[in-house]
Amino acid sequence: MSDQIKFIVDSLNKEPFRKNYNLITFDSLEPMQLLQVLSDVLAEIDPKQLVDLREEMPEQTAKRMLSLLGILKYKPSGNATDMSTFRQGLVIGSKPVIYPVLHWLLQRTNELKKRAYLARFLIKLEVPSEFLQDETVADTNKQDISAMEEEKDQLIKRVEHLKKRVETAQNYQWMLKIARQLRVEKEREEYLAQQKQEQKNQLFYAVQRLQRVQNQLKSMRQAAADAKPESLMKRLEEEIKFNLYMVTEKFPKELENKKKELHFLQKVVSEPAMGHSDLLELESKINEINTEINQLIEKKMMRNEPIEGKLSLYRQQASIISRKKEAKAEELQEAKEKLASLEREASLKRNQTREFDGTEVLKGDEMEFYSCHPGWSAMAGSLLTATSTYRVQVILLSQPPT
View 1: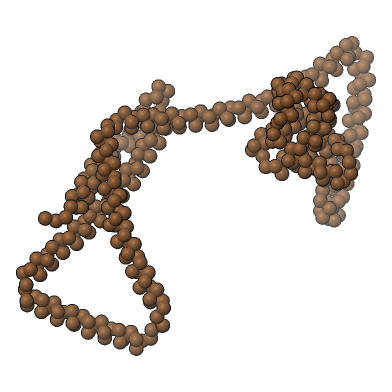
View 2: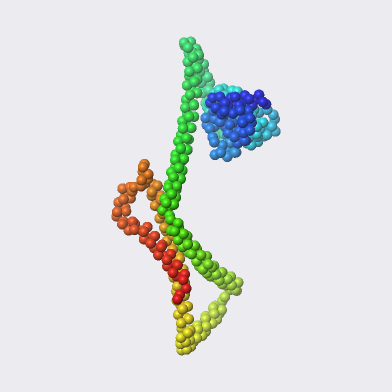
């Protein structure tokens, strides 16, 4: 086992892998890292295997590796039970399973490259048995197989003919070596082009993230530079007063109303179904109660007690102030949401119109739009003024009437 690991480490430290491992660092790799090493070796044999395992499901990884190992004719030692153990060990990144695979692959890399290259042309497509029950599909499959075998024989004859022609040429072995190197370099060129495109995509996403973070940092710095301790404290006090009002007055009232409504609905649901006679009886009771209420109001007006009149006036004023305060609080909340939406839209526009030197300009169609709609330019200022006015009104309305 030690000789096997030493050979693997030496091979991985050479071209084209250049992993820079030693026996200790390689043996201490985590299962996922060891699987990634195996995937990199398979990618050197077949460039289609170039995959980042962090972006691939374990089932797909096992299926992909087992498929290529089957094409490369790798046969793990053991019976069917050991084969199931091999598959399981490959999925979990077991060292006793992966070390022999790496050793076998690194011993015959060049040979396996040729086999993987030819496999795409020589692999027989498996047709499901249920489709072969159809005579047309079965005949077509047989014809395809026969055609492929004839083509294979023709290719073999053609290759033999070409070999005989070039064997008599001068520098035959040297030219053959150069042709092999050319094919290898073309495959490597495709592999490097794919890597280059992936790196470009990663760079593009990284630049986008950097721009977003820089914009956020700039906005935070501007906010910190414009903010003074006094204004921050005043703003926080206003926010605290507003939130305190919402928590202690508005929300409890709404909750109490909802509870009453729920209690009433539950009471209605629990009552038996009402008929026409029940409705008539309820209407009669409602009329009687309305009559009694009108009589009481007339008696109260005839008394015309000044103290009761003042109390009624104060109650009416308090009720009006309370309703105004609730209305202003709702308007303030809506204004805050609208202001936040406009700020997000303005930030998005600034990011879209930022030029090379970092300044912000308006595009032609946007300049024409704003010049034709002067009301937009005053919207933000009006909204800020309205927000401040609402906060002052809420503070004034929170004071008891004198």
